[in-house]
Length: 114
Ligand code: SF4
Ligand code: SF4
View 1 (cartoon, rainbow, N blue to C red):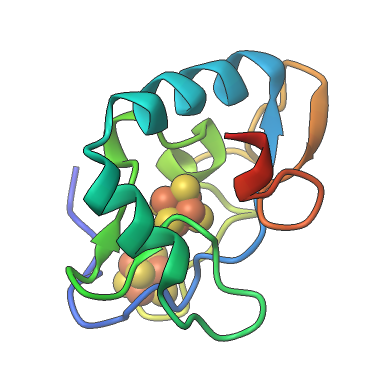
View 2 (spheres, rainbow, N blue to C red; view 1 turned 180 degrees about the horizontal axis):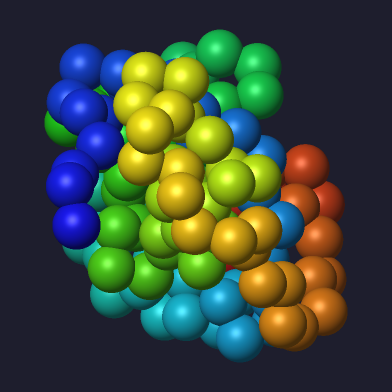
């Protein structure tokens, strides 16, 4: 599968994303396993309003990459999740949302929940 040209976007498409209970638990584990210094750095980074709380501005990457929600994994490859920098990669059928979402990261679920 061709990769998206994400380097340099600095979290352009990383806004508040919906997560399931299972994804929340996975992220909780990931955050708990982080060195305290890294967690503190991530929490204090001055993001633009609307940028995902886990986007790591210093490293220009997702701060919880291995535990990121399904919607982040699907972004750019489904017809309803198009990346404007590479729209030709959005060829899969609309993303299947199998499980119930419990809320949006950065809005309903914030640092106090981790
Ligand atoms: S998916 Fe597209 S907009 Fe998002 S970071 Fe990657 S290249 Fe940039
Ligand atoms: S969890 Fe990671 S990939 Fe998903 S929106 Fe946040 S920073 Fe981006």
